[in-house]
Length: 171
Image 1 (cartoon, helix red, strand yellow):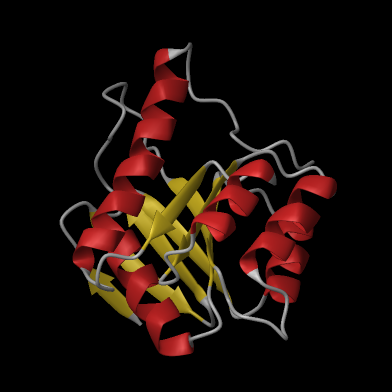
Image 2: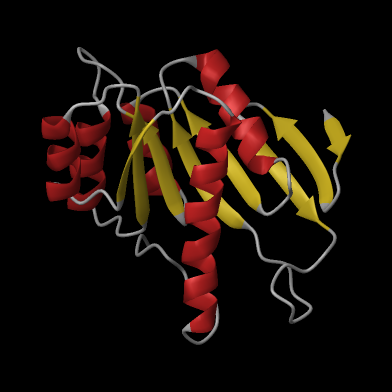
């Protein structure tokens, strides 16, 4: 399926949203697209958030329905950021995904979001290497706007430090 947006065309094939960007966002005549992996065990929520994140054409979102699926994707592709829901056990939760991803060499941006407002959970996430712990406000566009802002600021900071470099160390 193809859908035209302001900056480019959005394509969805299987579980990946592809963005073809027509306008430079870096000001140097080159297109910059952030590649993000979104992890959530709720398919409808996953697709909604992925669509909102990719809507402006500057973020390409790949999705995974479990921590295990996310680790497989991380092993096979480079991502600028991982955005994971906490995901309650018995499946691999977001902090277990974080630990496993860091242990396997992923050093890119890791955002953990959850509707559980628990200080111990937030501390556990930060101590295990999460860059941000984001309690959901109300499951709305405000949450997606915050995630987008964090991603775009990270890339802008990288560009300001001497050109865009890979934000991930996975080979």
